Length: 441
Image (cartoon, rainbow, N blue to C red; front, side, top):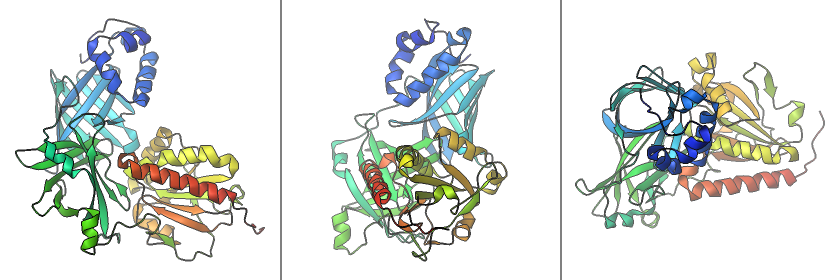
């Protein structure tokens, strides 16, 4: 049995007066996770509550020949186990889980991924991934989910923004590399790369004096990443994506301007529409098979956000909570939100992941199925240079596109996320105030 007994047998006592392993870990769990744990405990029968414990497991997953650090927290009883992958202060929780005869299964339905493993004493061996692609995972029982990385005082000189110049197939000429400290551990670094279609998510780790490089990673429900950053003698950084054998040079923005290198493309300059004088049109089925069209009466005279995305896309997951927030706040004032989702062929046959995506974020607005990702430009012909996931079109009361936003800078980007939230809110408020004359049908 994985989880041993604790002192108290009621859910409230387990949360507030549990034995030291559980008690010391609860403050590290985000408030939403704590709430989820409380609901889990309260839903269990009394006999199962007596077995509630928290265990930490750390180790690696082998991805493309590289070892990616993995930190897993398990909470619950044998018949109802909750799993959470941890990266710095971030976590991603399983949608369901079970442990039967040392066989652990954790489902992450909102990304159509699963951890399937066998526990033998203090070791956990198994796989993680999708039906098509899985990676070996090997963990051992641990006292905590975090180990302070090796670091020295010189690493603080790397803090701040850098630019990676490149010739991107999407047309962008530079990415932003942001380096700072993590909020979870004093010596832990946080790195994020901002691209035109979003960001890498938080990458966490530290500086290794032996190799004279920063090694940062994440392993969560959305996938894995492993990067190295090595300072160079000329003041630049060698940035390497170790899972894809890609290498770039990063410079401070001021140095990039001195070398006449272009800055990163603004999100509202990447994608436009072919004919701004034509109303933006869409007509796609929802998950019940009902066709929803831009000409439907519910959209007449409304401000509309048409969000192009897919449930496979991590940056689309980052965007969804903001769209829900905007809809709930401004729907009564005339805002509509339409998500047009492009899914892989197998998901189109049975959009299980998209349904889990809708459930996870409590999406109240229309979610339509547009086709496969390869059909994006065919199905949205009004888009010009439409090549980013996600991309949102902001439509005024007259049916015309007023602005587009390519990509989404998620919470891991810090100030960029907060600025985007404010800019988007300001834009919606501005469009709602415009009472253009709407031609009658």
